[in-house]
Each structure stands twice: as structure tokens, then as C-alpha cells.
Image (cartoon, rainbow, N blue to C red; front, side, top):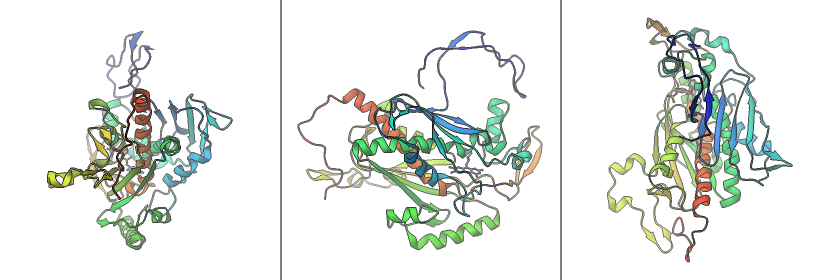
Length: 400
Ligand SMILES: Cc1cc2nc3c(=O)[nH]c(=O)nc-3n(C[C@H](O)[C@H](O)[C@H](O)COP(=O)(O)O)c2cc1C
């Protein structure tokens, strides 16, 4: 948790339906510390705000180093990769997702002061959610939000909507640019599996040529057919996405509470619908032997990368290899049993515009989250270890 400056909080009454009178009352002038649940990062921090159907969403980046050339063009391309409505296989909500830089850039360069990024919501259709004001979608966050806060914004899922990943993608674009300029780091991802269809990796260049982020042209027709059948059936499916960072400097991360792999896992789990994260060999380590798993080193470099680029919570300089599993979309047309706010039985069949497989649009989001963790750790490493010197260069990431 970040320790912020003390703030004053004033007495609050039972503002919301569902809060018992008296239980919400706070001391009139209590000194509290920042307990934000919307801010990622320690040195390159990103505070996310907004709701799916509010006027706008966005973020405030604090800690971006000064002097980097930055304009909307650097960010827009990444938002365009994530936005809905780009094919029949994703949500048909039409959002341009145009980003505006409101602060922190002067004469085309970052000033080192907070960068505010704004994305206006344009295509809200809140009437689609009227049936959900009182009932809870199985598998969605409706029940937990209601039970935690005593009230919730049901329009488009409110704050639980994956629309809030757009500001993360925008901030991630800033992070990626800095990492690329500083270390030549590149971060790429692709779809690895959609429902039952495994997608063998063939070519990074193919990823941008199809609506699935699939790295293999030969499976695209099968994916199209799979999604068309799924949509017709009114159902949804899960997916697996791989994300990989190359040219990452050795030394990012720190023992115990600032492990790089722990922060990567946390950032990935913060993406909506992610239920599992693997780093390097992931769950395959269960059946590997030590004689296979431990990545051998030669003077020419590492021979393998089962570790996924992290040892002891610190980057090895090898590629950071992460894959994530995303669950099937919970908003489906097929009727499901649930309850309403009186805990009476109801049947929920979700209408409206939804992603039948949320994993299809997750690739740019996972890339952005990885970039945000890496930039944060790069700045932390620079702050503590800039003076550490070696008389030999780092071991090459991979032996030729
Ligand atoms: C890119 C993306 C798009 C999503 N679109 C939808 C959607 O259209 N309908 C839906 O029910 N869930 C969608 N989700 C997932 C929900 O936001 C998520 O399941 C919900 O907030 C509950 O959180 P949890 O699954 O992380 O527990 C999407 C997730 C991602 C990553």
C-alpha cells in the first residue's frame, strides 16, 4: 500500500441504500493515510478513474521521467488495438477511445510532472442494463460490489467494466516508449488459445493482421468459425494470452515484497477476468526435473529460459515470459439461475453488447500491464543501484 500524505476525512452518513444507519459514520476529522485501490506502481504510478457509462475515463501518471518526447500519437495506436467494435467477434460498442493529454507535457516533452490522460465515453447504452439493477449476473462482479459498497453502478458494469483497462493501455504506451528509448525493450503479446483451439506460434508479424491477435494465419478461419458458432449459441469461452518482453535489463526487482514476478502476477491478475498467471514454465514445473528446469549458463549466455526471465524476484536479462488465462465472459444470452437483492430466485439472460471471448482483446492490455511493472522497477532500480559497477558485462540472454 502506498503511504500518501495525511488527509482529513469528514463525517459520512449512510449515503447509500444498504448501509445501516450509523455504521458508515467516520470521525469528523480523523487523520488517515492514502488507502487507494486505484493506483498502480511505486515510482511510475498510475491512478485510474472513471466508470463504463460515466462521461469519461482516464488516468494520472505520476513519476514519468522528464524530457521524453510525447504526444497523443504515441498512445493512440495502442488504444486502437484494444478498442471494441473492430470486428464481429468482439463487443459492438462503438468507442473511438481518443486520448487527450491534459497535463505533464510542454512543447512536446514530458515535464516530470503528472500526466493526465482523458478518454471520453461516447457510446453508452445504459438502458441495456435496466434488468440488472436488481439482479446479479453469475460470474460477474455485481454481487460483490453490492455486498461491499451497499450500492453499485450497474450501467455497463460501472467500475468493474473492462473499459477501465483503456487508461491502463494508455499509460502503458507511455511506459513502453520510455523502456524502448532507454533500453531497447520491446513488449509483444499474442493469443495462444481460444476456447478449445490451440494456436501454435508461427510469426509475430501475423499478430497485427487478424482480429484475434493470433500469431498464425492458418488458424484464423477456424477461429472465425469457432466464434461464429459461439455467438449463435449465445455462449462465451475463455482464452489464453502470452506476453513477452525482450531486451529487459538484468537487475529489475528486489527480494521479498518487491519481487518482479510477484508484481507481474499482481498486475496481470488486476486485468478483468484473469484467473491464472504463469511465468516461464509456469505449471509445467510440476513435472519438470531440476536437471531440466534450471537454466544452464555458459560464457556465451543462458541456454534455456524456463525461469521466464526472473530469478529470486530479479530480472535475469532474458525475455520475460508471461501467460494468462481469461475466463469465459459472464454476460451471456443463455439463461442462468441467480438471485436479486432480496435474495429471491431470478433468471438472468444478458442482452446488450458484450465480448463473447474477452481474451480476444486482452493482448494489448497484458502488454501494457507488463510495461507498467517494468518501468516502475526500472526507475526503482535506477534510484537504488545506479552506482553499482561491474568489471564484466551481463551474461547474454541466450547463447547463440
Ligand atoms: C477486454 C475485456 C473485455 C471484457 N468484456 C466483458 C463483457 O463484454 N461482458 C462481461 O460480462 N465481462 C467482460 N469482461 C470481464 C469482466 O469485466 C469481468 O469478468 C468482471 O469485471 C468480473 O471481474 P473478474 O472476472 O476479474 O472477477 C471483459 C474483460 C476484458 C479483459
